[in-house]
Image (cartoon, rainbow, N blue to C red; front, side):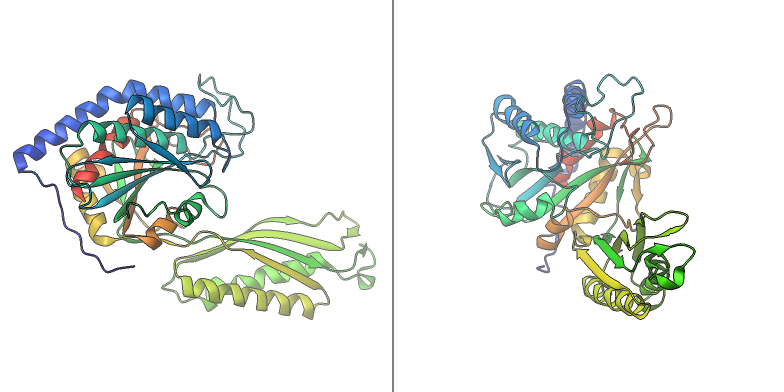
Length: 411
């Protein structure tokens, strides 16, 4: 990544800044009913990763017919549009929202916008992300004479599924023509209250790899273990031994997580199965260590399994890289967010060992990825994402749309 320095760049005097701030906040609040309508429509009709065909059409329809913008498709179900301000070639700021949903059955708690696509749910807030970016686009389009440069609106498919829609969009040229100088992404967070936002400078989110392991042995009767090669016992030793990858081999200064979440043996109380399948994830914030850990995991597993008479198949599905926020533009965004929401409403975030394919953008251009508070205990919107009862406080849509628009003036 180029060593690029940024500074606060509002291009307006303090009195104008206050006027601009109030204008954006008021317009975002005026848009809230429309944004709520859009979000509920998207929530009612969710689509899985790389299948966002109807969502794509809805985004295109809004940008073309309500804002008068030209759009083009990218990465099959993605959408891109440009808003040109004054001196459009001066710089290009990319604003990104993901559009896909998850394979989750939504709770039936009486919400009027419950998913009509059974088994598919917007349980991670991507409906809100898309809505907020449409709202920000509305505001910026109306104020195009007030900012310098070009805003590239990026509506991305497939965040929830490897290889990640961000990587496909980059491959298809989303960061070119015009070349993007800065990327900004927003994600809801139910652990922050509505009206708050969270930022972290530097390393923020982890890489994520999927582990698929098969330990093969020799099945037999539970009463005659000496005639079998027990893959459950072998797998147990292997899982325990692999934990030394994070507890003893990794440097303590590098956050690492190794978790196994699924073990399938298909034996019985008196049956030793012939094989065991194990699935897990490895996450870290250092690419060199990530590669080394892959190698060490396979070596340790092979030594344990083969040493106990079994056979090993160890597959690693490489996922998203780590996500790093460029420190100077993140600082600029923090200052702008404090102006927009209030000093006490902007929180410093800790490292988050979940993964996000916005990381591909952060690896390519200076970027900032931040959190929008949507938690409200009374509305029960403080439930974790990827949960069948997940929901957002829709009042946050105005904050998300308005603040994202305001950040364009602040970076």
